Amino acid sequence: MSTLQSWGVVLALGLGTFLIRYSFIGLFANRDMPAWLSHGLKLVVPAIFAAIVASGVGISAGQFGGWALWPKYGAAAMALAVALRCKGNILMTVITGMAALHALLALQRWLA
Image (cartoon, rainbow, N blue to C red; front, side, top):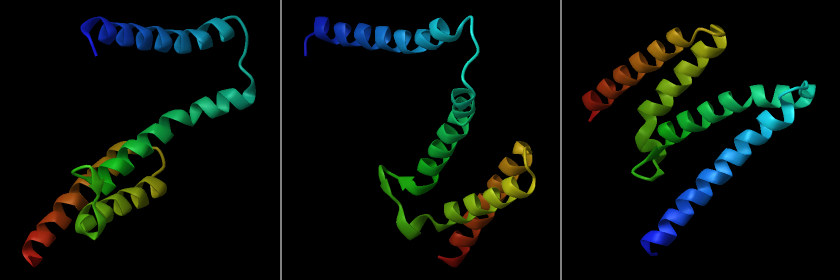
């Protein structure tokens, strides 16, 4: 691919991204969004965050980690339990997940 083609791809992707974002601003600037669309958009951020966290927990070196990553699975399960118990307390969830991960990694080193 030549330099000119590469810049063409970059510009086309930039224009496409701009048009996608502007479509919501242009379509809904002076009117209310339908309730179903508003509700759906509220779920986008948690879905993206869950996908990022799940890939960080289950994937190592580009592959599914299997049972070798059991400390990450355990820490994620503990953080999920705290998140469900303490709704909306992200700080407590993160602290619990981090502490559990470090404790389980120490346990893994001790067992090995």
